[in-house]
Image 1 (cartoon, one colour):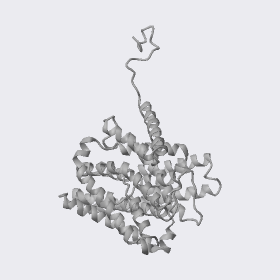
Image 2 (spheres, helix red, strand yellow):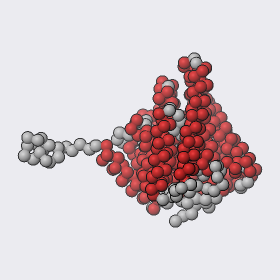
Image 3 (cartoon, one colour):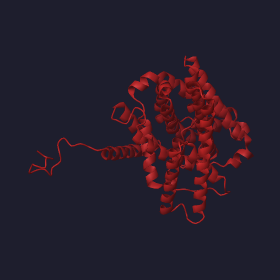
Image 4 (cartoon, helix red, strand yellow):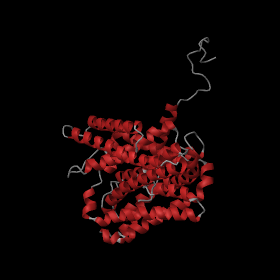
Length: 404
């Protein structure tokens, strides 16, 4: 009997062999990387489409990652998003908003219109006001992971690309802010405590801003003595972001706001831009790959069947709202109509950040969140594959991709 220490063949593995988590994770990485390279080289699509497709296959075959976000996978999602949000924030120059106030007006208009469109569309479908409000708050955001990855992969640059990055950062901030006020509303309704209703959102915002300021200050201090573009310094920066993320979790603060605000503070503390290795090197790249696989696997067939119709309504309503807003305000903000349409399309993706906000709501009020789960996960499932392709085609349409 192999595997039995009393057997002469004890040194042979047991049969059938049992695989551990490391095997499945490494196998997922290999398959996702290969499929990503295939869609990039042969179909000329973003690699993240291949990564997300692996997650979709995992969910469709019920291979163990979905539905939902397992506790062990939350750390991967949080760290990958932290790297991308920090990188995104470090590219947002707030001085641009002062010199071009119509850009800020565009951001506020498309976010407000997205919220209103999703809320009204869901209400028309018979969704109760609390559920419609919570879904609309989450739907305001644009996926920073998709936007940053596609822009970097195709070396995109130009007015639409830069505005896409700024509006994505602002959208993420609006969505997190709106979701925290939804928390406050739920505190008032479920617990009946006005103190908790106001104190919780304020604590999250103030505490996240403090941790973000400490991270930005620390990175700025180190950057005076080290070149953060070399390998060792990149690992140091990665460790600092991980440390800040750990503190954020211990303090029950926002894992989305801290890295985003830290990047914005760092960028606007000096006139010169900050340049990092893309996604902070190979380790960051592997985390981003797993982020798309995990996000693509959060749904199940049952979830999709239960929420597909309303998920499609969310998808259509928010997309139309964003395109209409950016198109109508294109001329005042200094771009052409074609660029305005493309900008609205690039704001379509919704994945990782929406997933984190949904999970936070599940942890806080699971009974209420159960009404949202099928709709939000269905919308994520639709946009996980469509979103990256839409961003890619929109940037190509306005000739801002540098095809290699």
